[in-house]
Length: 113
Image 1 (cartoon, helix red, strand yellow):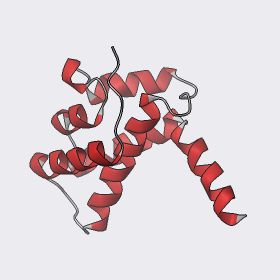
Image 2: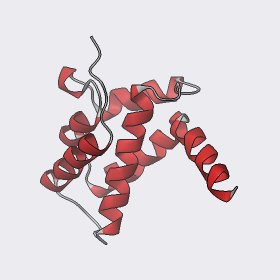
Image 3: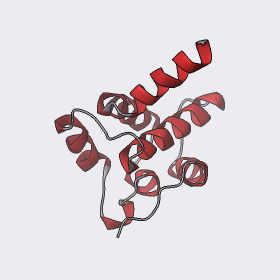
C-alpha cells in the first residue's frame, strides 16, 4: 500500500507546475542554463528558454498527466537528482548538457507534429 501511495504522490507532483518552478530555480542556482534546458524541453530546438518556460508554468494550474510537460518535469528532476548525487556544488554547461542528454534517453517524449 505504501508504494501505491508514493506512486500517487509522484504522479501528482509531476502535474504541478510549481514543482517545475522549484526545480528550475534550484538548477539555475547550480549553473543550469538555456543550452541544457533546450535539451530537456520538448520544444527546445524551437527557441524555448528557461525564462519562457517559467512564464508558462506561472500561468498554468496543472499539467495534463502524461503530457510532454510532465516529462520535461521528470527530466528536470532527473538532472537535479543526478547532479546532487554527484555531490557537486556548481556545474558547467557541458556537465548539465550531458545530464540533460541522459534525461532525454531515460524519459523520451514523442515528437509533436
